[in-house]
Image 1 (cartoon, rainbow, N blue to C red):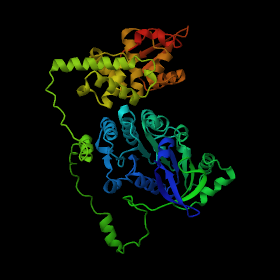
Image 2: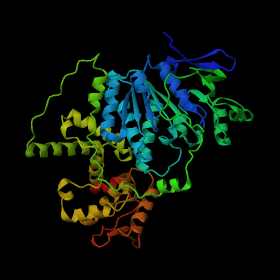
Image 3: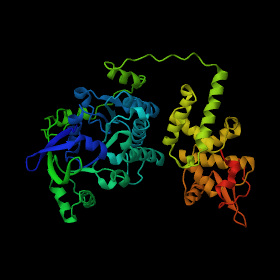
Image 4: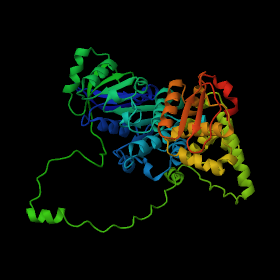
Length: 499
């Protein structure tokens, strides 16, 4: 059965239909400057397809939360939940086939990227039995799949870009149909944009964006100027779900509207200057103690409530209290799981989000779900494990001092510093560039050398080369020094430093 979604009318006045089944197989890219009607287009598509397919919207500005009242979408305020909680929410949303809106409003750019990546990871990693068809709409996609590094940390960018790449490159087999919208094609990662086969291009003014839009639609460069003349709500369409040739269309009306409508001009209030002065420059109100935030709502409860009419819910069994000995034994098993994850050949070069997902799955298989650490604690465990530190070392007083010094560095460099510190404490040869690069999660030997230079510039270590080119690293103030080591040695020769 073919499901045709009416998007509006063509410039010739004929109905403009979108083949929903074809869209699920081929994905969609929407471009348009602010004010071009891009969000209106997404809203129309979501409203028209809501009765036919499960949906989720990654919403950085809270524009789509109104869908909850009219179409029953579960609105998840990401600010109130941890990354691990959002990953679980993504899994449960797919299992119970609940349409959702992930509202990222109120978070800074880095936390938006981290939480969106966690939620998308949950959608992506769900078991095969729950690979139901699903539209995944990402508004302002250039924020989550940037073409170049920005002001956020490199780890957050890798997590977000990895999740977006999974959605667009590997999501189809899992039933996920990515619909990404952006104001600037030039700011969107090319490998993400290139996976779309359907395009809706709205008004844009920059030459580089017009040129990319024309290329994607198969238009000649001289025709790219036409994108400047498009009106609000007008788009050029192309793709197997839309039209085999570039087609102009105008998006139809929607049943819901965003919370913040288009600004309207209105007259200024009439007020005397002295009255305005008294109001504007009045003493600020006294500071009050900020009330403690109420506990975050449980997403599972919300999802179950949304499907209570169709599902029979069993209360989860309450585990009996765990003794200190059993808890220690379980933590030791968790450490073994972590070592098994890191023992894989490519573990040193995979992003933390992917490692964490595999770690959680392995812990569940081992029956350790009740003691699985959250993502921040996993990062700390990973830093210690990559440095080769056991729990006994981590509790040593000298290592407490090393940990304090490591905290002066960016999080992704701390494992490298602690690995060098361990080699210095044990009197082992200085790790090679290859070993340092692996601990950092990179294949680049040049980056490893830059890392050492940066750590030295922070006053934490001193690097020296002897007459035959072997490197020694000394920790400032601790007087720990590595034995001379060959910077160009193969990583396999650094066996004593392996996790």
